[in-house]
Image (cartoon, rainbow, N blue to C red):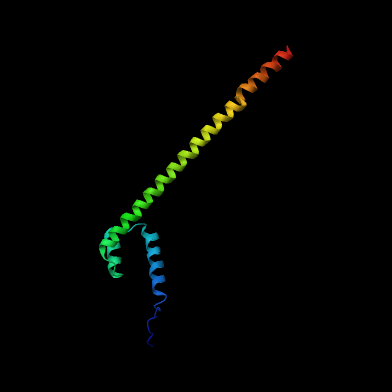
Length: 109
């Protein structure tokens, strides 16, 4: 009995390739530039566009990391300023506790 090979419609082919590429990426975790260039050739994307896209994506990732680091710095600085302001406005809580203990000790004597 001869079984015909299953056919994939033109509409589904891009989704199949996209999913297959994601599965492969998850499996291998990386692509070499030559692997991306080969895949681009199959999709009729000239190598110079693959190279340019790689540089753009890497630059965007670097900018995103730098933005995150800057945000961390701002949050940390704000936390320090808020803490210092709280100490200046309301007094050092340790000092207040020591003063209370001293006054209680004085009253007990």
